[in-house]
Image 1 (tube, rainbow, N blue to C red):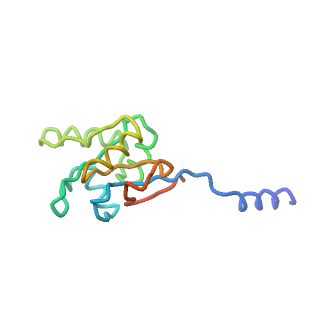
Image 2: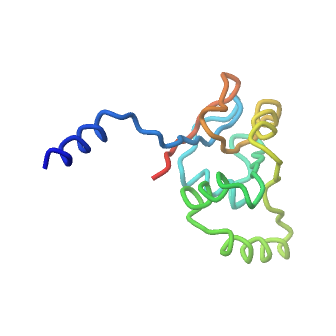
Image 3: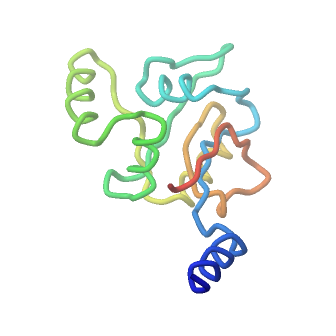
Length: 136
């Protein structure tokens, strides 16, 4: 019984070590809702108030991309692949893919309308946070 109480107290006292992630844009982009972010990454929303939106992905094998697809797109890579095949035949290309969170962050700060996702540990003052989530 004492062991259970000690474990409970430790689990309450310890800070959460779950990573936090954010959908980011440069300072030019205004607020977006999660459904608008989903529409941007599925290329259903391409402009907002005269600004061309440029969604950026990490590589398909990146764990953060998988978390993003689950959290915001509500789709797995297996569901996205046929979606983009169909879109290809309609003349719609998937979001650009960059190699790392660092390259995504740099691109986002330099290109108006760029939108992507990174670990919040990598964020600097040059980007705007549109949405955040944590690991479960």
